[in-house]
Amino acid sequence: MDKLAIVVVTYKRQELLSGLFDSILASSIAPWRIIVTDNENSEDTRKLTEDFAQAVDRRWGRSAPDTETNTRRVVYQAMTENTGGSGGFNAGVKRAYDLGAQWFWVMDDDVAIESDGIEKLDKWTGRHEVIQGQRHNFD
Image (cartoon, rainbow, N blue to C red; front, side):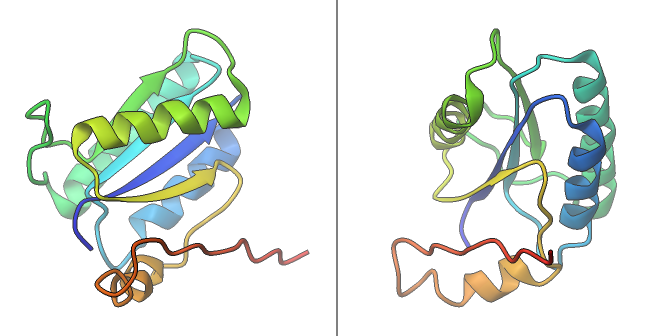
């Protein structure tokens, strides 16, 4: 899957975000970018994201440069105000697009990805322009 960006919006839920980060680290395929849009603009979320970025670097290394010549897979984006889910997703997808992403996986901070999720999606990207999944609610 060429230049997949995972776009995550978070607000005051570092514990849930940490679980999502763990699931991404367990992925069988590395995403090109992971954009973390922080609607809280929290030092705790910034630190958690930086620790995650270091773990991603150790797991997969750097990636192809984006339009800003950045090669780190994780991009932290602090919002100046809480724009809600839709505003956070708008900002996150815009940032990913501006960086050169070709595919966008958009999610809240209270979910996890399956370890083979990107791998399963990859086989469909050559035949479709959009793939829309759904959340599996275990409750």
